[in-house]
Length: 433
Image (tube, rainbow, N blue to C red; front, side):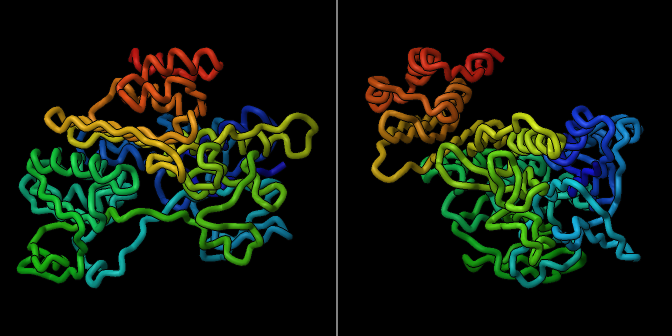
């Protein structure tokens, strides 16, 4: 059997290692587009901060790790998949092809490019690859004037890294608040106030309209609020999209990402997907979704690889327990978290508590007596419990009314209901850390 994995990020590497463990005699090929050893994009902010060197971004440290596992590494990009011939076309000069018996699509995401004049200018960078990080470190010296486009989840992580470098930072966000896809108005507004109190200028409800060369090697950035800012560097953090364009006309079904079943298999037998490019079933919302976070990518890769290893064998197939939207964010020392349907559901009830003086906010969303979503700012002691209740779909009974009256009673509610229903998910262990 020949297993081909497209994508050398965390999902691809975990899948390759899982396959080797469960299919010791099979051939495994790991195809990575970048001319770098497999690394974690989530480590790039720590590289920018100076907490680690480039070696610290590597997913596996040993230079011979992949060769010792007999995982063949190919540096190329897939341009086409022929599911009838079970063959992949690569982008090398010869137009090489790669035959497979099973295929895992783990090509991750690509930064979304905003349609703004001047995005191609020197000094305008994404923050997505090691090459991007090297360029940013060369320009983001202490005191440099940096404008960042986007204040979503990824943008706030980059914000933290840039602030640590001592730059004069301005953040421009099109939404009416920071992290608009993770936080409601009260919570997003609180995060903005916190960031501004730390010396970062923030413009929400504002767009970058154009970027033009300024004096010397600077850039003039025109904003929709009428201002023009002269800066040394522009960082684009306006979101990402699944890297699935090469699957067009392949017959592999895609919506926002590559659609999969509970086994991470696509509509084409023997073809699987995992990670940021996969659209898997979310048990809380009851819909399919792309959940671009590393823990979900790791579990999807494990499930896909187990099923790839069993492709021609009888036996029970591995299944994904579900995908839940999970985001925990540290923004200049202020911890925020979001789980599940944090915006609420039709006909549901909610409880909200804000303590602005102590930088705290808590919002709980219910459907009947089940907590289906929540978000918090500053209430770190409840993070593990919130995740346990949302993911476990725990029936709260009378505790729902108690939480509507006092949302801070999450731990007693969890202890009284989740443990009794067998939904103990490690939240207490997380609280002890």
